[in-house]
Length: 183
Length: 160
View 1 (tube, chains in turn yellow, cyan):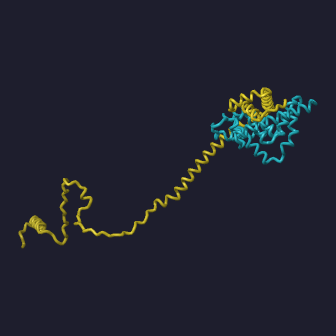
View 2 (cartoon, helix red, strand yellow):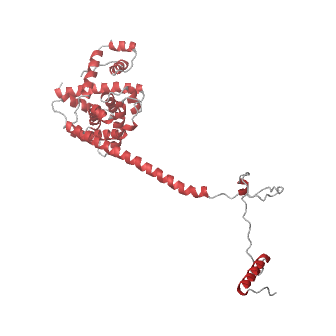
View 3 (cartoon, rainbow over the protein chains, first blue to last red):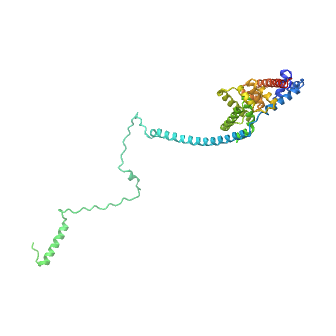
């Protein structure tokens, strides 16, 4: 390495040009025209080569790091899955808890508000018809009701029956004794 | 998988970045591993707005900052251990790494993000909280310092 004395603006322009940065073309032309510019660029290149040719990590080290990276990636995948499951479970628990907290409130009927105004309507003529009657078809004829048969009262025998019994009695008497009527 | 792809491409640059920032091979290994395990854990949040390199080195810087906060050992004390990992015949390389060690921490960070990570000035500026002009000036100054330090080291060793 040789020590090159150059104006700062020229060496800075050459340094930036060497790094591939944008430089002023006119200033670059001036810089490249300076004595020692060629050597300076070569020395920059030599320094870069030294920078990038330092000690390298051993292949064993690189393999070990790569293996740890694979393990970490595998672990991370499982952690992600576990987190998703845990988050879903937490969400479900929260939903259930919210349901328990809010459900009674929702089901409890609210007290009706006190009436501010009472409106009294004229009472309509009440129909004796029940809703069931109203639902019946109007064409359907009323079913004839069977006549109610009163059972004969034991102490009040009809006259016809008495006459029948009397006739029977007379016949039996005539058959037994042949006698005429005694009354 | 994104993490595998990034590991294939950036494991060595990240390791070398850490090695030069900490000066300790074991620390560099631990930090590299931590970076890529973080990438595995956060790759679902990756949005390809910028370049992947910027994202990887942002994580690397965060990991390094966290380690620095918690570590009691300073990088300077670990430099002697780190030299053991280098080949003895690479005199120039040792001189280069020693020159890097003598830089200010931010200058070294900016330089390595550019050279090791391949980040643009805009990306380096965003990561380090600088302007692009600030990055440009720092890189120029850092390169000049390294060149002077390496030349000085070579002249010391060769007895010039």
